Length: 124
Length: 124
DNA sequence: TGCTATTTGCAATTTAATTGCATTAAATGA
DNA sequence: TCATTTAATGCAATTAAATTGCAAATAGCA
Image 1 (tube, rainbow over the protein chains, first blue to last red):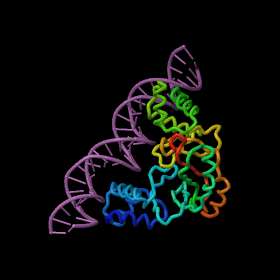
Image 2: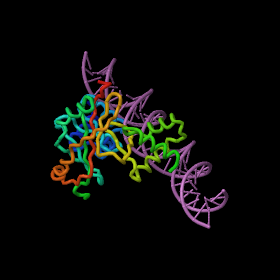
Image 3: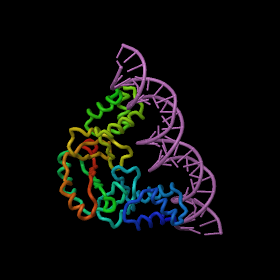
Image 4: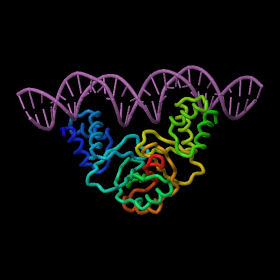
């Protein structure tokens, strides 16, 4: 557990929404943490591999985002089409649906991703 | 409406799941359609702009995919984690949820994306 | 303190997507 | 039909996110 890794982890812990590698990099720079963008990527990869952070990809976005795995219930996101603001949605109407989908498709369902987009209060 | 554009459109029309630009390019090559990958990109862009095709991005995938807009009901997808097979899901349990989400978040909901992943019959 | 294994920074590479520009093909009108 | 305008194409180069190789630096531990 190195200084840089702690900085990455600390920032993820204190942020209420998922961050992209470049966002993490920019914020760490602002905090005067000497870190390379490649190191951000590698730390996120490592933290994901050990199950500490979760990698998500929002609909229509280019980059991956990362959020803490621990202490968070199953949730989804809503994202503003205008300013990009992201908030958690704590509801999930999909648990009951899995059996039906497995029956219809013969797939074995592992997980799902759900995302709403629209306009946040400021951008309406 | 050029030959190449017709080829792109024809392939999208005859495929039951969303295709990526590189998949389209590879298949057109196989059909001996002389086309550049850049042209595939530009045609998809143009077809999207006039509302003929829809651009989607599946969770955890790198590239965009495209599918016909016309004649298709609102639907979602299920994707095999192993072989990448994609199928449509014609159900959507989310319409009723929009009002609740707007109330809770004060966002104005525009649309949503929902995707299941798991293992297809062959890969189980 | 000294040794080993891991992590880091830098440079270079990969892949998806985009852009500039000269050439070619389509489409419209006389 | 042919000429003229307009849009589409191919090639090369570029951009951005992510990854990799490798030497130097750092952490962990005896």
